[in-house]
Every structure is written in C-alpha cells, then in structure tokens.
Length: 67
Image 1 (cartoon, one colour):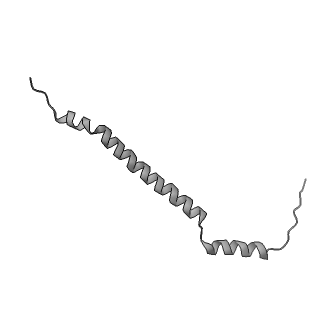
Image 2 (cartoon, rainbow, N blue to C red):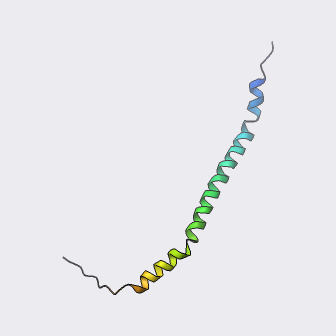
Image 3 (cartoon, rainbow, N blue to C red):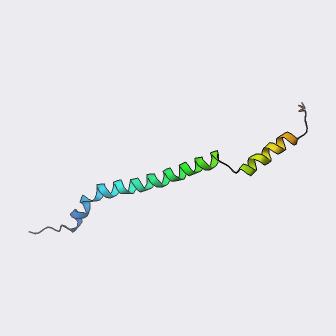
C-alpha cells in the first residue's frame, strides 16, 4: 500500500505559515495604531494657532440657566 504524501507535506508548514501570518497582521495593526497616535499627538500647527487665536479673541460670555 502506498500513501499519498502531498497533503501531509503542507501540514508540516501549517504552524510556520500561521506564525508568519500573525506576524504580518500584528505588524500592520501596530503601524496603523502607532501612526494614528503620532498624528493625534502632532496635529497641524496651523490648526493649533487658529484655535489659540479664536480663544484669545473671543468676547466674554456669561452663561445663564433657564428653569
């Protein structure tokens, strides 16, 4: 009796391919998360200056509560 060994050869690579796949997925998500955090921390400087200008140039407004 002879056995077919074509599928068993692929089964030996299954754990290696799984590790490589998980590494690629983790690398993609880490780049995405780190770049998102970087862009949140270092926003456009023009937007920051515009916000500061609006905050300092605004008039004093007193709040009132209606009941």
